[in-house]
Image (cartoon, rainbow, N blue to C red; front, side, top):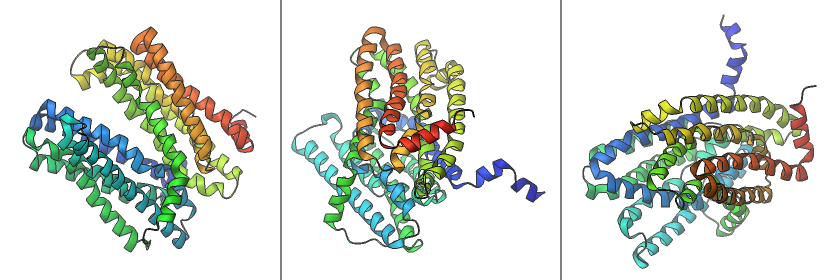
Length: 434
């Protein structure tokens, strides 16, 4: 009986490392969302709505700074680790370079922020909160998610992430009781993650026998230079995905912004799905690329159909259920937010179309091409959003965001065909009925 069960196709999928990567990455993201939902009412009750808004404002500044700290290593790191899995010396050098590069960038970002706060008097309303929030830069710098992703051993880091978020939640309950203590909120989030990250790095060193070499600034410089285009690509992608609300703010009232923001936040959670698929299969696809494009095409083709099906199910379910979802989250009847979500629910599906193109760019290490496509899409998104929002308001912005995903697919496909025509043609031809 057990032998029969083990031979079933779905059992094979469950045992596959890429599937397990996807599940553990989903656990990380879902735990982040869940803890955010749990902590929100606790914080509002403890520090008040005004201070809660300032805490989130400081957090948004840190999120932008973390794009600098990450510097594209979330894209290049897993590939380097996956390729050098069995070469401990090369792996140790790669890990050391990435860790010290990110710590250097976090230190530089901290200095710039502190000079901006105390030297130039910027961020006046939340200077102290932002100053204490810089701890989050070092938690990002020491997060070895890219390492475990490349090693395809995500179980430990997913458990660690949940544990760090529980520590943060416990810290809120124990130490945050009045508005004066608002400055500690982001610090607690950062120190909880940083403490767990240090333990993970110790585990990598002692248990997995990865050595940490002294920082060589020439190697760090070379590592940063190699990743510059990935950093700029990440920055462009961040604008393309998150810039819609900023554009809408120039044309809409606070009420409309609130309705659109609610629908967009739900969409951002859904949009994690295609990103998780790419992150889950990226390490295995990078290794298969060393064996030849036939192996990559065969592997990715199996995943692509399932990803599109998953995106379609998410789009239909959330579009149809949008009235109930908006009412559940807002505790009120918001027909405008419902209409926005009915359209934006299809963003993840359109993003799924581009999974293969992005993956091919990453596993072939085409940083220049990735940079070009990211900025072309970013420019299109800004222009389309401004024009359509001016003429049609928030609905026009929804259409602009949907069309951006389709344009991203087309742009990546055109650029890839110029440099990797054999692989692209073989994959897309394999989708056609014989």
